[in-house]
Image (tube, rainbow, N blue to C red):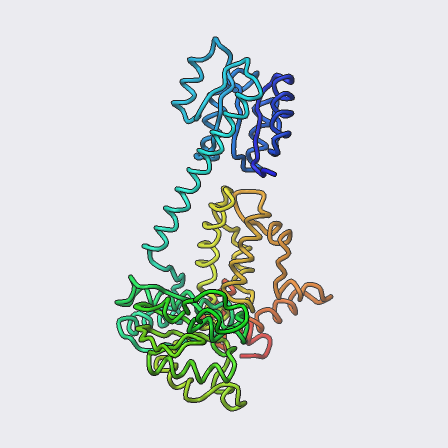
Length: 447
């Protein structure tokens, strides 16, 4: 069944009902509006693939409504419904952004044909938009948001190592952006025009890992019905990125070490040796030196991968980057969901900044997406925060029956611990000056 969504805007109930019957029988999802105000309300809530618009309705002029529609969705496919005497108005509407018109009276076949043509135009328009975006992303730069000294140091190291062919090991907690940094290094390298191939070591089935890396020939094992090219060959001339490399089994580690050292591979089931020219970048959220002590990771592979090591700090250690990241994600998701949301209330940013973000940047991104979805106005408010289910650590304190000063003391000490005793950093997060913080600590006996 078709899932395309169509809006019919017409004050004539006979026209609305007839169109509804014809189009729903075709499997389309159809909404009806008798007045321009109803239409604008629906357009503010949903995205429609095709809009059928009668120009002559009580209240708002049809051409004015068309302008409103195109402002809300510049790519909306609007088909004008017009009587014989207003064909000139329909032509004017097409100059203002309508794509076609239906002249009354029209039959079911004419209606179906007009809708099908509009849907095809919509499909081609969206296809072109997606292709242009994909091309822009491919040709554009990877964006890493942050101004903290910690993230500036990470980016500086990336710029220094990128022109070389050195193997890089990126460490950091889950969600800190290790994959993004790997792409940035590739983008800044002489291999930028070559492929960037990522291997998710955490999701691949261990029994198929060797086939994924090196490929296989037809008949190499049960289920190998065709020849398959492995990740090493796919990345030839570019960068091969092993995400969460600490998850691969010890027996595969030996074969991977040989491939990394010799830059040669043999597909499973074949004795053919293929030379590959790849730059290796690996990432892990594990302490590989600890894994070596436990016997789950080879020390020789670790030293081969750890030629250059870059550590991405967790978000809680660079809290000054949180407002920048939050606003960046807000802009992206407001555009994605076609919502006019411009900023956060100050209190919201304070709560976002004070939170420890155990899931790091990924958790922040998901949180902002939820906030945009639930937001009711043009700014993210504390009500939106509560509606989205965001529960800060200080909110947990409020659940206890404590005096206000005790809540303030616990909260400030928590922020100070997170900043490892750095009063200047803690004062910045708290939104107070260093002198005020020092006086509060002295009063509580913590100076």
